[in-house]
Image (cartoon, rainbow, N blue to C red; front, side, top):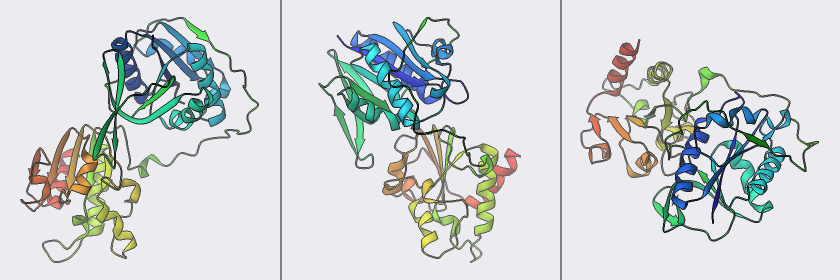
Length: 339
């Protein structure tokens, strides 16, 4: 009989993160489908205090606690995760794709002689057998996979499940010791976070705003207006707290010697050779909606576009709404409305 372990960690804020809550919902559904027990394993400085906030019905709650497990560090995270997997005797280990667990769990799978599948975008239980969904070749091919090897580690990408509801239920949490605990060769001496004013990539934002190369091209008056474009885009991002995406043609202009939007980098690139975000809504501006770019929007639920070309790719069934208008004028007015 299967036994499902939800492996999670407490964020530096002392709370359970959204990606972990989504994985918790997925683990609960998988456990119900398999008719298996669900065990929750938490890692953090005071992990036991957060066990009851996950809002899932689990047969047992386990925790590896201590100040040394407060910060992300491969050695301590891998040791704690290994201890939780062994203590739970889990056959299926579910985790959310946080940077902390994505880094540690491949090594944990090797330590317990298991197998791991990352970037999982769906799961289904049929006839008592778990199968997962994963995309390949830049989200152009979808595969359904199963594994006879146990324990099987499954890391879910964000946005697959809705987050498990928050709870304040009191639960009994069993402390798990880590045999190989410290002293660690790696010491965490602090955190150097970038300025929030300079941040343009916001994975949890409701809206993805994508700018295409049209922002830097000659406009109706025969001249380009890159500084104005940068001001309009930055103003919208600051007011809406949207996440910024870009077409490949726009970010490539920096290597071609052309005028560029100063805060746009290849990290913002969305599409076949870029990122595949999962925001609920997406707004494309000055981008023609060509297939290599649009493939990055595969998991965006509602898509809208602003383009002067009524025959652009977005108008051919790739967007829910297309506004045939000048993006400069549209975004200027939107910024005014946003105050």
